[in-house]
Length: 399
Image (tube, rainbow, N blue to C red):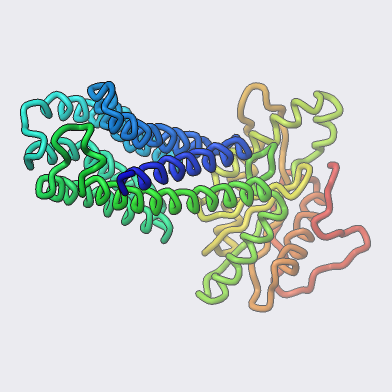
């Protein structure tokens, strides 16, 4: 058995292993669509070494030769939509159409050249080079450029670079007298080993990145309120504590708004919980639209929300709170019931922890409720927080 044949068999097994791994991730995490495309890429790519074994048999050389070329090109092209979905971008169908067109044009041009000429080998490798460069472009343009993304871009670029090198090597050593003799040529071993190593390395990096994305997605789901779409209490406490630490180091002001929808229980009792859910969703969306992008917005439970504002003074926070109060009073969609909101505002003191700052904002919110609701109250700056028996930190209010 030629040495290259054993490498071909190993490449079949490795491609199948990657396809199965991505398919398993996709099955266990239905929200993740990219692993389906990665699985398809390696599954189609697995057909290439299978076709090479068929080509070596000497039967149907035209069929197996075309299968080797087109399945390998398609397997690489599928990485482009997979990366687009992975990074949350629209699939660039125009780019995929261009890559498919280049593949067919290259295939149509091959009969014009001698099999072992540089023109033939360059044309043969061109679609693979273009597909990998398209993958590099997708990562560089659309990824957050984390370290793992940059490593992936580098590996895709090295894989792209090795295709023109393979063309020169193929022209130098030859690829066999005819397609059936390819697997016995010295070039076959070089080609199978180099391509196999690079695609396995790329597959491992993609597998790691996919796993990290699953972990991030799970963490986000655990910290997000499913009804409103904003952070839940757990997510708020983590983000807010981090922001307070940063602000302390920078010496920048931070303010906290605690918001409580007035008489919300009456909405659920009179209009039903579906109306209450619509009101919660609308209010959360309004907060996201009204507050700065850097704000930490959360639903703490029931009808109570929190907004932590970075680089915000008491006056800036008061004005924003009034804008939120006015927007709530004005109402939104036709199916959202009329409602008002009470807001307590506290700014960060040098000695403040998140809990201390929350206590003062909560006391201000209690004063807003006691004074008649539908108003904004600033926490007192000099005096300590009143610890009345009926003031409970971050309590859930029915009214």
